[in-house]
Amino acid sequence: MLYDAAENPGSLTPDELRAAYDSQLAAVVDAVGVEAVAAESGVDCDRVAALTDGDSPDLTLEEAAGILAAGDGYPDREAIVLELRDHLLMGMTTGVLDVDTIASDIDADLTGQEVQQALEGRIPFSLDDLSAVHQFIAERNDRR
Image (cartoon, rainbow, N blue to C red; front, side):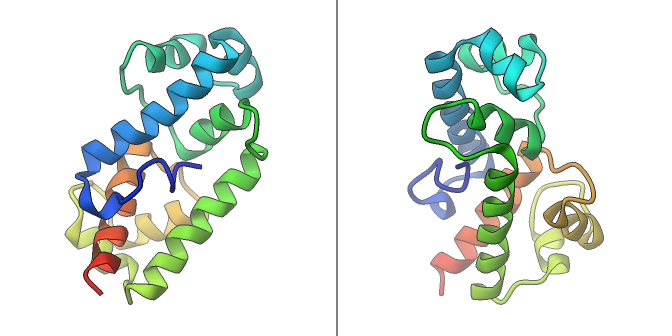
C-alpha cells in the first residue's frame, strides 16, 4: 500500500522509491485494465495508461490510493491513505523527527508547515514529495 512498495525504502533514493510506487500501481492497472481503473479511481485514462508504459505521471497520494483501491486485495482509497499517513507519522515518532527537520533535509520544495499539511491531508501530497518524505523517514529509522 505504497509504504510497502519497496522492501527497504531507506536504502533507496527518492527516485527509486517513486519507481517502486509506480511499479505497484502499474501492476494493479495491468491486472484490472486502464479503463476500469480510471473509472473507479477518477484518474484520467492518459495518466493511468502512462503507468503501464513505464512512465511516472504526476499523481497525488489520493489518486494513487484510488488506483490501488481498484485492485483485488486492497482496501478502499481512504483506508489506504490513512494507513500510509499513520505509517509515516509512526516513523517520525520512532526517528524522533519533526516536520521542519524533514523539510530541510529532503530535496523537495516544501516547508515544514507544508510537510505537516501534506501529512494531515490538508494539501495535496504529490507522489514525488511523498517518496522524498518516506525515504528520509525510513533512512533515519534505519540509522537508529
